[in-house]
Length: 329
View (cartoon, helix red, strand yellow):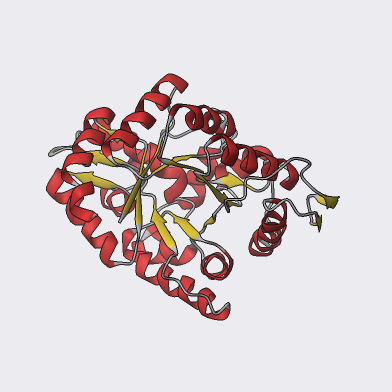
């Protein structure tokens, strides 16, 4: 099993934690492309210059945040800077970011399919033409030598259609959600792979819990913080997941609208502890390792520790390198 981290910190902390993760044996360092936080591309460029072997990737790049030509230039530049360590994770983005940017989704799976086809050409230095609902590109080609090492494309997906598409056209999956639904996700991936007659032996299925919190006892204050941190992901779950976990019994739409307004105050009241524990990995080391074993049995091939990682991030990463990584390699 592979392991990664995804962090949202100051540039100084990001470099320090990225180097620490590399030194203790993590395989991937993922950065989110979210308009409201520090720029993912600048961050990845800095990390490329301050690390040596850990793989770097977007988890995820929103296809609506930049023109495909800019994304292709970005991806190939980071690939050059990192000497072949870049992985291009893409998605349509979460509801919170889309609402702030005024983006209304139509045919998201088709958009991802078409843009991957364009990226495949551009990332090899070939010309591409694209006519989409939001962007157009006419016989565009990058005007500089491209690093010949291929850039893997991963897709951020949770719904059945997007999962099938991912199994059909991508090298990997970046998925959130309840650990109880992951086996079902694998079925949709397999269906897509069978459609394309693909061998899934090298396919990377990465799971991103909303947080990784190692503590024998978790205070109410910490639980409330973890709920508010995880709420955008939890409330973005597909309807099938809502029904399976009982999320249809809480005021999801009311909470989503509150989050869009920037009001997270109601989340701790309405989001039960047991729901958070479905989406996050929380507990003592024995509990956390047990959850990782469950993930491996469900078919996940990578676990990404997502901020908040705590209570003390550097100590957790060091202990993870000692207790967990050797046991799963």
